Length: 401
Ligand SMILES: [Zn+2]
Ligand SMILES: [Zn+2]
Image (cartoon, rainbow, N blue to C red; front, side):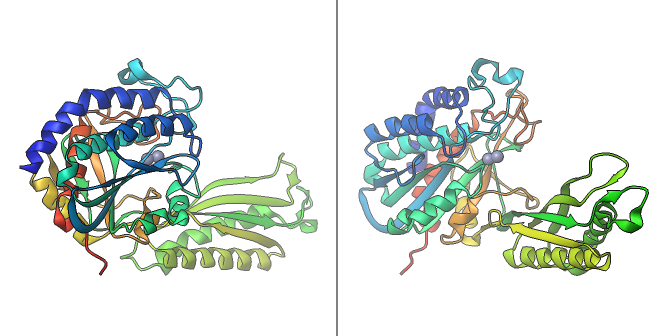
């Protein structure tokens, strides 16, 4: 019964959401600078009866107390920031970014409009909602330290008593109507490191008077590639990649130093730290043997996204009650990072991939962060219905007491 009402309300608000999504798409704002975006979100929420909090400079938290007394506080999250890049694409011709060098090429415009749609639906059904709903319009997903981390540090969500959190990301490889789910690890920890090899420069033809950091770096790169294959349990996932190496200027000069930037991807902080220690020890050993030294720094990224099994069950069960929504298993975790993980360090919950791929929208080809990345707006019907229906599924939270 409630699901039928949700579906009707979703269809009723859909045209407005398409306009909103295109508005956000035309006027993208960079991480932590989402001032106009936030203003537009707040304008939309306030007439709907939400209590709006602004704990950070941008983004907002909207709270709605339901009419049915219940020990339940459910949070739903959308990220609102855009990327520092130019976009292109015929399918988006009507609403391309009007801001040079900034574009919504990760679908956060759709996430934002979708959660505003959920806000509309829930406001119409307020009297029937059990407990409290917290809608999070989060800034700065694309840029460390991560808006999710900053929000968690304000303590507001903890004070509101959030019991479970759910969020979604547009997914080009899922069809409209689908939502892809996975229990446990879903997205990796993206940690980074900077490794500098410090030798002694000199003439390229008199190597015995120099300590050549180029040769030492070549050895280090080769040897650290065996850390994952020889020191990590084959049943655990990890990647070590050196993405940049820089040193030297011309062919006849041995440089003083070489600098390398790399990334460690894994699903646990403990494993990442262990790999990092091994990189540092290996590099130190090789450099010292040649009379050189190293400077090493690990820059920690977002934690891994790990979904609570009962929250995934709740999503599956909710989807099964909605005729237009199909829950499909996500075949394997993805090594990309996502700051939703910061919420999951304190709250149970699940992230999900909302199928936004279709030939009509040209959105089934290009991956996240590609200039042509697009989302099929009809996916918002699926996203809205699923998120709104989750509020009415008693299994979507577990009381702390
Ligand atoms: Zn992104
Ligand atoms: Zn994204």
